Amino acid sequence: MTQQAEAAVRPNVRVVLFGLMIAMMLAMLDNMIVSTALPRIVGEFGGVDHFTWVVTAYVLGTTVSTPIWGKLGDLYGRKAVFLTSVVVFLVGSALCGMSGSSVFGGVEDGMIELIAFRAVQGLGAGGLMVGVMAIIGDLVPPRERGRYQGMIAGIMAIAMVAGPLVGGFITDHLSWRWAFYVNLPLGGLALLVLATTMHLPKYRTEHKIDWLGAGLLSIGITAIVLITTWGGNEYDWVSPQILGLAALALVALVAFGFVERRAAEPILPLGLFANRNFALISVIGFLLGFAMFGAMNFLPMFQQTVQGASATNSGLLLLPLMFGMLVVSLVVGRAITKTGRYRAFPIIGGVVMTVGLGLLARLDVDTSKTESSLYMIVLGVGMGFLMQTSMLIAQNSVEQKDLGAASGAATFFRSIGGSFGISLFGAIFANRLADSAAGAAFSGGGGEGRGMDLEKLKDLTGPMRQVVLGALADGISHVFLWAVFFTAAVPVLAWFIKEVPLRTANEPAPTATPEDEAEVALGKAPVA
Image (tube, rainbow, N blue to C red):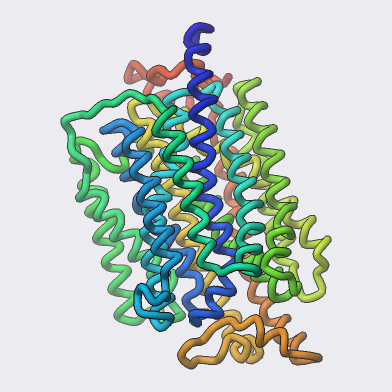
């Protein structure tokens, strides 16, 4: 990029970045607020066996909508598409806050309503996540992108800190409903800033969105998530329901593959996976989301139940994890911008994250808050090496015209990993807890309105209390142990990433000839 062009871009980036940071904070802040308020929500509505669906519905909505938002931005311009996603997110937030209220008929169906509205909220969040990264990709060349994406990753870390703190304060002093209402003023500010300061090219192609492909993908992914959620819990693994879902997923995904090969504008261009780096980083993103979203939702539960922290204090206890992620994200982003090198970071991040989860798998009733904080720092450092690096590699692997699709695909695989992780780890936790007599008694047995009643735990004393806490700690540590098996594959896969030079301008990737395209696809491009 010439100095003149760079000077023209930077002021716009600085102005727009503020609005983008607010939008990204919306998506991240909400999930972290809800994770802290979740024990109180479950206590009010009941249904400990369904509590993970409050998170799963949000992540699933994000997952199925992400490729659609990304492709819509490629086809019709990103500004209007992005602002629309903000509006959808805010509507979903308002509806979530009204779940189980007199507006919809009372508490009886509150959990069902909340899960449904969380899915709506997730649909909007998918546009927020992919839109932020794609807009930065429009404004900033890959070589400069590390610094800006490092800042976005830093905002994500701050949101993860602020979320539990705000969520804890709201839960302790107001109502869990304000965990959703708090999004409304923030979202209004983001809309105002972006509508007035973000100036992106408006364009529209004659192609139509691949709605058939989007529908088939959504059906297939939803069926798989239902399998991981219900299998061995609601239904036997060989029951007609689970086998039927497996058949539905297989048919939908096979049909999706055929449709995408023939679509003029595929929702998820399969040709992108011919690029070795893109294929590898997609799998790494899936594993990262699987472990990160799946396991992290259980930290506030451990802190509030086993360690006896209040909702507010459980947010404070997450500070070490977020601090590690924030510092490393900023350092890695600047290092990539300065040196142009990135291959080592996902390898290091995978190793460190695996070690962190392995340490968290040792949590028990005797684990001190200091000890668990040290474990969380290690996990946060590993996440910091991986978060923005995975998106940067995905975007650098494609041409500018496919930037939205690539950003959407990278976000999609991380989100679908999160969907599977939350579902699978929720089932693992529920089954482990149900296998314990003390755990089953604490969760209310098998009757209607089954809930995780924290007040009931406070009433327990002596040996019985220790037995119940032991059952909870065992179930939660078991989740972290399973997460280790998934993150252990990350550094192995990252080892095979080729360090293709980061472009210094927003121009087509250097793959003008078939020979060059083959080199990039085979990972033979020269090392920077």
